[in-house]
Image (cartoon, rainbow, N blue to C red; front, side):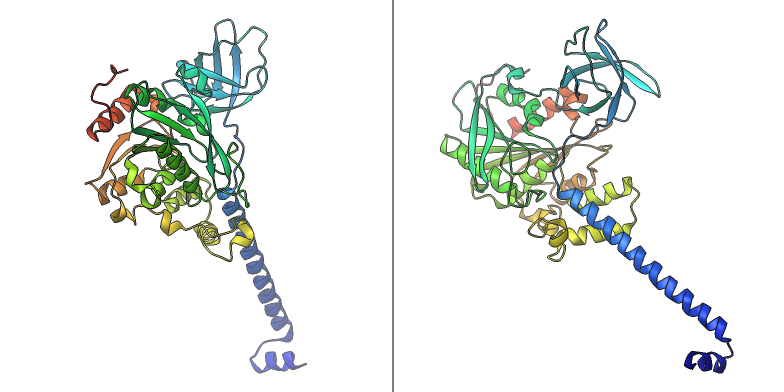
Amino acid sequence: MLDSRRAARHGASPTAFALFRGAAVALATATALCSALIGAVAIRVARQVVTPAGRRADTRILALDPASQTITLEHNDDTGLPGRYGLFTRGTEDYVKLGSVLAENEAGVKRKLLTHVGQDARLSAEAAFSGWYFDRPEQLQLPFSSQLIGSAVGPCPAWLFPAEQDTDVWCIQIHGRGTTRAECLRAVPLMHNLGITTLVVSYRNDGEAPRSRTGTYGLGATEWRDVDAAIGFARRNGARRILLMGWSMGGAIALQLALSSAHRDMIAGVVLDSPVIDWRVVLDYQAGLMKLPATVTKLAISALESDWGTAFTRTGAPIPFDRLDVVARADELRDPILILHSDDDGFVPSDASHDLRQARPDLVELEVFEVARHTKLWNYDEQRWSARIRDWVRAQGLTPTAEPADS
């Protein structure tokens, strides 16, 4: 009765007022549902960022020809790249090496197989294209030993490739997110030819090292401590100068070591391949690829970096994006850095690499590639990649006075 009187007083009929009230309730309900949906999507995105996941198929095998030792893959931005690569498969082979592109069209890419496949081979159509090339240390045909590095989460497996002659220079190789230490094997022969001992390490939650209490990534904010333990291992075994080399998220880890390591006095240089230098740049870029609204991205980052979000992300502690933003912390750097990054990386944009070079031109050198994509610079142009790192390492005085012949 009261609503009817109020409606009459303002010149509206009771029916119109009821319709208005109903529309307002519906709008409020829709707004609440929309907010809830945005929140749910943001939390899901945040969880995906910090949750280790298995290898994801990103192409399909269209044809396999054992007679000619060729394989045809579904065409995408990676499968048609020039160079040598690998392919994770299922069936009679779990990994095959790929050579040059023999034929290509919009549908598929035919490549030479560098791993012999028998006539009775049967492979699942789903496959994952890889820049690893080497998937086991034995394939390098270099002496190595398996080591366990004691860290706060437990023993972390590592491969140690000693230099031919005693040296106090060690290179510590740090793999990226969603992969394992085999990713780094491509760099070992180069370091070996430079007379440098190489330690290829693992870290918490990567599928080889122990799981942390939460089982989630810290995006470099926690993993660096496991690699710091590896520097301690190197120190106890004769290392006096450390060259850090990080791939993708391994770059973020290497930079945290350069800023915070207990053995910072030993770090003589940092080499970064397709590195994460500022996670916010990466997450914004990835959100754009997924066509997510800006509100979803902002809420996901907020959930990851705040105390309230840990209940949903299950990280146990906020992700310190400010601490992981090395462009903002560029003034704190004191070690020479070489960055190799493709401007069409496709996963980790090169913007922050350019920004860091601009912020610290006295320390940072940037080698810009094109076409090479993410962490596939060695595969795309091994000669250029190797020469650039070799020249830089020599310029830092990190090689013995008598070096083996170039390779």
